[in-house]
Length: 564
Image (cartoon, rainbow, N blue to C red; front, side, top):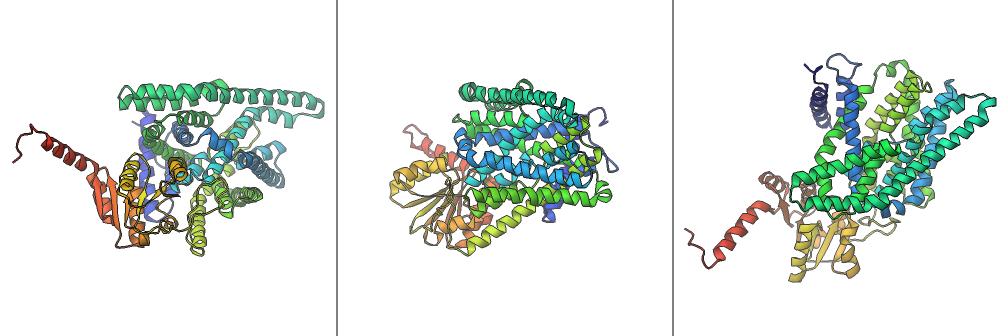
């Protein structure tokens, strides 16, 4: 039956297997990514039993990468990109050069041709978009200086790989020519490079001039129709349409096109709603991305060439990470920033697979080298979450040895924010639509307020006007709560809408101060039970409060009938 419906079979099989093995991995306290990858191995052609359609799985995974980059673009402005260009551009260039040379050195030791060593090394040099962004978003680093540098670094790598994919056939011919044809090949290569740069520059200029005005206007016009379904469709149409058009008209990658579409949509006041509308699809297709990687993996390569796979893994995990660490430190950034960037880049993914596939098609890369590359990618993706866990523990240990401070999201990340001296104050977590209204009520009451928010732009007016003390950071962090001085606070108000994030904050706060009055918001009865179980003193259920207000308003009317 599944042969007649390969799309449905691939989606169902991929998601079901990913859920089963992801749940097992979570139960064993392993990264859920390990479960997703193992699900792909089980569904792949190298293991017995069910075999999914690899081609369809890869296309579904590409959709996930497009939506992921679109979501990143929504939170990443042109100003953010320009702010980190001084470190991201030279940093990515040097790091990719070092990794490529290390790969070529391994190829030379194995007796590979120069062209094969070059393609192999280049594939080792570029990090996976999905893995990097997933790790950064899970730790809420996207709006920090570290996160901005990592994303800017990623964009530079993306641009470099776009150029490499276009130039690879020409480079292969150049490396394979004799001396008599050398000058002619070099001239052709220069023409291709100039033409490629011209198309990329034209696309970026078009997005900055036309897209920056047109996309927010379209989104605003659709929102005024009042149809949420049409708004969601408009967001997806813009994200996928710009990505597809960029790839086919300008030879720019889907990922880069989606990123710029998100950046231009981020100029609209509806960007937050657009991000929420794409989140479920993004998560589902991101899972299929990892499943598709697992399907490409041939476990036999670990038995036939274990030492070569190990050498490639060392280049990915230690070689290019060490290069990134040295580069970031050379720019005067803190050790924590350098380690974050290093760990983020200690893996490879989708662009490496695309490059390897093109290399095999062009006769520049052997199938054995491709399998080694895939094996190294799988290992690096599995190891990367463990590296982040080690980094998180190191950060906690280093913070425990110092006076509790919270890292302010400033360009230089140098000046930490000390523990608040406020007493009898209300700690307000979240400065969105609800948080702002709560803040106004607290300020009118005369109570001192301390606001915790991850988005520095949202609380910049408070800092500039001196309306309240502000901490920029993740309130689920022990260090951030310590800086808020909960020991002397009168109450904690958790105004963030995400129940899982709110639950972490409530649990951390309750652990630090058992007698603190904690008030949280919820959108369902299940969320009420969840937050109350984690220690919230009171949970405000939106629909229940709305029903109460409507009832009270109806009773206040002079003509209201008596209520029995």
